[in-house]
Every structure is written in structure tokens, then in C-alpha cells.
Image 1 (cartoon, one colour):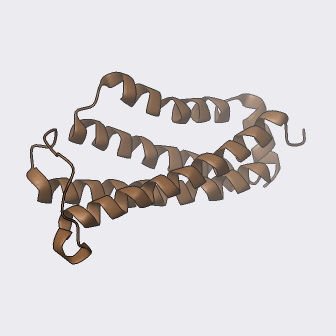
Image 2 (image 1 turned 90 degrees about the horizontal axis):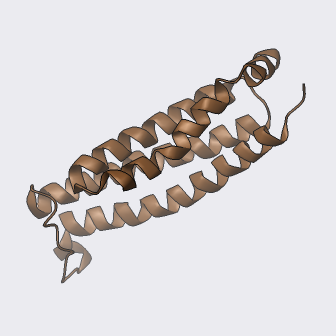
Length: 147
């Protein structure tokens, strides 16, 4: 069985979501650096970190950590998308690694920001769908056959 439309769609979505995630992660990285080093960057007003109990320094470290984690996960998702599009054996493994990193970042962000459970569940929907697709027997056979 050659690459299916679903595999093509998943590969494209991985690349799109990974690219957008990398751009969004850059915002987190800048915000984290601005929180940690406001005088160096010339920042005069910081966001209100009332939701974060650790204060501005702890918030900066948390935001920077989330930014780095999401950036790495996003780049991994782009690479995984290319491998899924090629129906390479590494596609499912890279996809699972990327969505597991993304989910761990979602869990950390959930506890750090105390956002609603609904936002957390919506952010975790894509990783669940990816895992369910790779559990399908026809997908497993196709990716195993391409070894």
C-alpha cells in the first residue's frame, strides 16, 4: 500500500503545526529573556505574572523552559512530518517523540499558569489523534514494510 491521503495530510499538518509552533516558541523565548533580563533588553513594563506563584524570576525561568521545550518539539515535528510524508520507518517514532514532548510542555504549562482544563484538553487533542493513527494496523504495516 503506498502513501495514503491520511498519511499525506498528517505529514503536511506536522510541518504546518511544527512551523507555527516554532514561531510561537520564539515569542516565548523573547518573553522569557525579557522577564529575566529586563534592564539588558530595555524592557520597562512586564506582564502581570499574578497566576505564577514564583514571581517574575520564576516566571521567566518557566517561560524560557517552555519556550525551549516547545521549540525543540516543533522542530522535531517538522522533521517527523517530512519522514511521515516519505513513509519512512522513522516517521512514527519521530512523531511520537514530538507529540510526547509537546504534551509534557502542555502539562507543565497547565500547572504553571493554572489555565482551565478545557484549554489543556484542546491543546492535547492533536497528539491523541496522531497516536491513534499510528496504532491503525494498515499504517503500522505500511511503515514496517518501508524498512
